[in-house]
Image 1: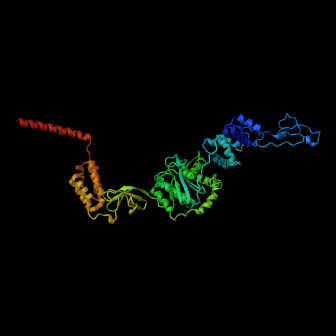
Image 2 (image 1 turned 180 degrees about the vertical axis):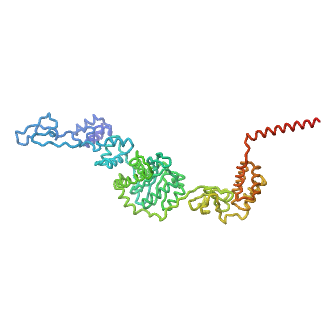
Length: 537
């Protein structure tokens, strides 16, 4: 062996390394390393004895016990007695025995409750909180943590990188699975969704529960969380879920329009993570796991309000008052520092709306919840984007985002047409529609002409309805219905009149038609026979 290797073994032995570790690091066998260490006068430490004493002088007997006291009458302690210091003498008072062994855990009396909680999936933090709240536990959390780790034989967590952000700059948001809550509609327990919003600096979190998720629900939960915090940050980091991001792209993501406008109302910029990179929002990911595994694991609630109240109480009593493992400071204290850095909320909340795409009909209108709203001329048969709420309908250019028209909400079945959108002359598409009605039947064409002359563009959808009736019931029967409508005077809605006339018109079944066919066959045979007799004569 080289001199460098031998000196390395001696140096590691002088540091107190066991032989197994020296063999693992240097590749020198334990027997060889032991010989070098003994030659150098270094004591060989056995494996697993770091920091332990090889003997217990207080419990061992010494042959010179009492030799230095100057008393020849003091008896010597026999060597066969292993623990004379723990025995009592006639002149000494009895030593009091403690209630439990000093090496036993304070969690031993609660082992049944801890094992039951572990079977439900609850973690050490949740078990500690339950012990304090319901069993009067006086120990510390670290004692419960060690005891649970011993039961589970779970290794310690590996360290990870931490993203540091200044106060008031970043919020992270995500969804998780919530507890089982009884649904009032079905009267059955149903899995909820857990919405978590976490501040990047203080780790202050807002946790909300909901039964179902949508784009509007996602935006409303954000707004409710902002109100609870009393302010907003400059940016928000989120996952690429469909409620927030329509198209995932690290450089140019397509943000959901409602979510984008809601964030713009509060002055927040969305920063979607790279796909498959949850570590970018690790703070909220940890916040989701903390709530799932600590207060909510294994619990059921009878109502969503009860579950939210329980979660809010836990947030106030435990989550906000805890010492965070990364910052080593209390979450509530750090939030008090960060809150002045948050941007103020606007006075009015954001007006939530619905959105979608529509194709402009031949009448120049789009349909929104069975009502019709006009678009500028030139948009027939083209796609437009539509936004609507309880009061207004907005029609938007899909390419430029320009607002084309804004209308007040109309009742179902009614039209809302601006004066500048009414055509000055009949469009070619309307002429083609009239000619098609005329080819189906003269009465159908007459009804279509009179409807358009009286109602204008509002009648185009009704004219198209007449064509659909002719396709369904036949042109001849529909033509008779239109003739009846003209005889009665043109109704306010001729399409509805003809439709009801066709529905109430008696329809012959196969059982009724079969005797008629047989009778017609007999008549035909009789006529044929008469014709033959006449021919012979």
